[in-house]
Image (cartoon, rainbow, N blue to C red; front, side):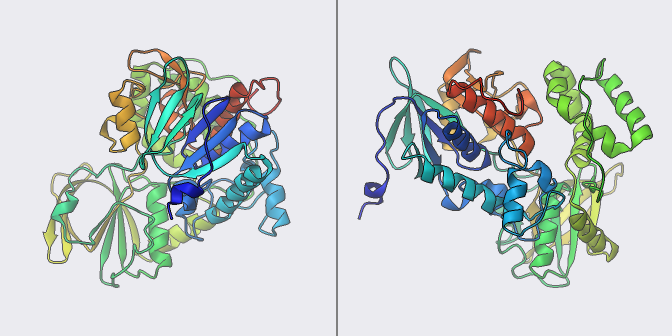
Length: 464
């Protein structure tokens, strides 16, 4: 039987929005359109297990916790206690809890399933992959699926999540023995075939590397783990019981040097956690006001420090990481990979420690790419991204962090004009907003765009 015969029939465009990508950003946007009684929605996601959850919550192990307390993780900006009530109703914690990411994924899927059930057919999910989006004569867009299906709509919203990480410099996976290089740091078989005398090298020292280290430990790996990045910085911990900071209401005056001076002064007065957290309400404002040159300097020199202080570890996770470090099973190093060559069934990894001239050789049974998500469209192999670039329908932002968009989330064409028919939300818009990778930021962005496309700007809520 042809599976396509069982798919919902999709009519022509008439107040119809197609959302490409059904992870957190896309699913939440679709839910908000229904809540605003907006256009009918077709939500396209190629993997059912990632629907509403995305990679972050579908690939998580039960040991992987949210790095934000439950009290700030409601998916609904106009109902800040929504997730807390859900948690308490299911007996899974309270507002101070750092819950497992799998639990949050279940919450998101339940929220989307309820929206679909209550939509009277106005919100449907289609499983598949979009490989092209083209304008149609007059107005609207035509989407082409990988299996040949066509979908017509008024508007397409790209909710692509993050692009897969690039292969780290110095590595040629095809030249290594089978099973040595892992591009997926959340692979279910990450520790398969490893022994207590083996060494695993994690390329990256951020949150993705922490996930991989905990996953290796949970899967029973008893050997050594070396996490390496250019600076060797690892995420800091949240503090149990720390009071919430209201944040500043006006952005600090001056340029980047003045901002660094401001943060240092506040850190001396209130501690570095407060100094970082209180900038949260104005971070997007600071970023949008900065020139391309200033943003570039931030990315080159300050981003690694910002990341490890801004995106922190739940205390329970930090305890586990510190225990692995204390026993010598996990170490962090600052260095750069020079080469990786086959050495029997393993790899001979040559790397140069930071500020040193002599290289170090490590025999690695497994090398895991933990460099984190990327956004460089020009290096993407995604068929849809390549098609849109070739057609001039989208362009990279000036720093090649993702898709260039305007303040209304409209994509910017290659000729510099915004496109009313194609929008983009989520982490791929970080070039224009910077802070748009965490739940509190994405929920505001999806809420705002859903209001605009529903002509419901009068609805109250966060971000107004």
